[in-house]
Amino acid sequence: METAGKVIKCKAAVAWEAGKPLSVEEVEVAPPKAHEVRVKIHATAVCHTDAYTLSGSDPEGLFPSILGHEGAGTVESIGEGVTKFKPGDTVIPLYIPQCGECKFCKNPKTNLCQKIRVTQGQGLLPDKTTRFTCKGKPVFHFMGTSTFSEYTVVADISLAKVDEKAPLDKVCLLGCGVSTGYGAALNTAKVEPGSVCAVFGLGAVGLATIMGCKVAGASRIIGVDINPDKFETAKKFGATEFVNPKDHSKPIQEVLVEMTDGGVDYSF
Image (cartoon, rainbow, N blue to C red):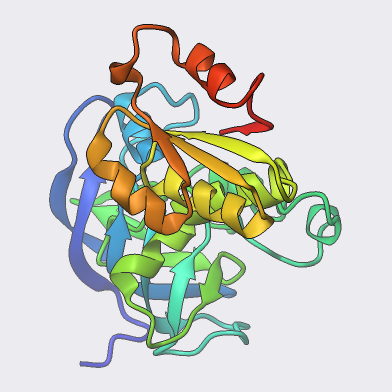
């Protein structure tokens, strides 16, 4: 059935209040307005930031809301003025938009676009309204993405097109975890060839950091984790050696200093 221009009813995990479990509800998702895109989410990951906001510790947390910011899906419909996307495109929502026009987008030192930052922080789309309702109540957006819903609406500058053949259950990680870790090594720390790196925690972000260190040319990449089951996977991403703090009686930093003749060049 053609859904463009119509309200879509679908399932979403709604965060009604801080500190309470998510509740799967039927929500209404309004059509996209000008420069907005409605996306059918096929896959989403869970990030610690989602849990942090749900816990109530996030000072910018708003409720009720639909959390989630690591997703991938296909464009269902587009609003007026959208030129870079069309229905059927495979996309990843971006919690850091890219307008390409503001001083931050034009500055090579940062990508923290400011064009819609204020309204995004208010849990709203650029026109200061929400596209979500549930049980007759408006529901806030989260980080401009809200991927814990079968359908979501985002600003057209908060979306990136990806290869239609890409496995969505994997590329959804590019929305946060992978880009965070990879960028930490290459863009923030600027790891130099031949350097020695230590990466604490071998989850998705840690593995992406290892990958970034390898691409940067690090000679030694030491993975640190209390779960040895992660070591084999980390090796595939580029880790050269591993340390389990549980195997040592002394503080882990002392172990690393001894292993590296005085300490690592970069620690993540």
